[in-house]
Image (cartoon, rainbow, N blue to C red; front, side):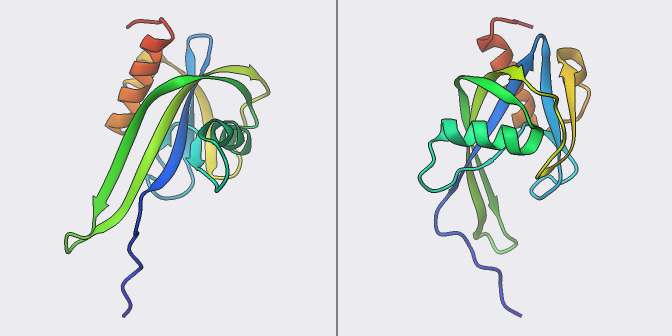
Length: 146
């Protein structure tokens, strides 16, 4: 049996906290990692693409929305070891805050569902702790302290 190939470098991903009024858009992931969980729209950066371009493209591909991109909220490193202690994957996720501009949120591409969620509901969804932290930080950046 052949062991799956292990990464030789980190992979860059981009996530986007999209606000529409006082709600944030979440997508239900259709692929691993975290398949079936609610998360932020986003995905892998392509060669030659800026992270801002990645944010706009991934939001459009997954949700059909046009956004006004704001500042970087934070950078998250996700490193997972395999059973023998070797690095199985390493993602560097650059998270932005954004404002909804136009469109109707529809689950497309890697997303199997989408929904707009208010702040108090976000805390009850059992999101990955880093997703919750990023949303809370974006909320403060936007000036909506909680």
